[in-house]
Image (cartoon, rainbow, N blue to C red; front, side, top):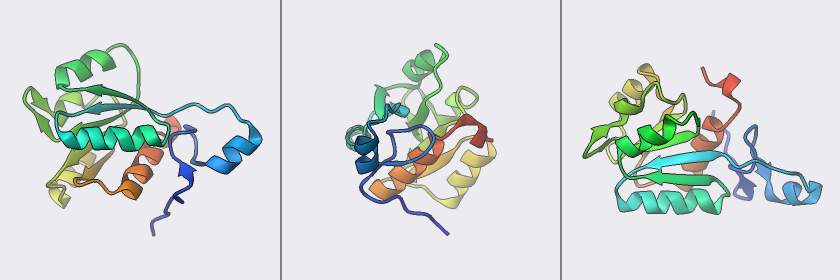
Length: 149
């Protein structure tokens, strides 16, 4: 059974749980944005980046796997969302660099999903993107590291 995140909830406002915009402002709490590295070259990446930024995620972009690898080599561990393949490599090139690897594809079938999970990725997002699904997956991937295993 899926648990849907209400539309007035920011997935990126707190790394441990989704926080309602109203309760966040009421409590005056200091929040930390979920860090997202978006690795893509398509226009779908712009839409996805906009969707995440609108929900207060801290989004960085890389248009190649080389640029993404360089960023990840600095020791940062963001949620990484990458296209299935780019000109200089594919999602498998980022395995082992982050436990929070989400792969995007317009052909997101059970075979790709099983491969991503079996090789150590976090999840798959189908294109075109469904906003609620993006929010759910990023919220879960951006949770505390001890829940990622």
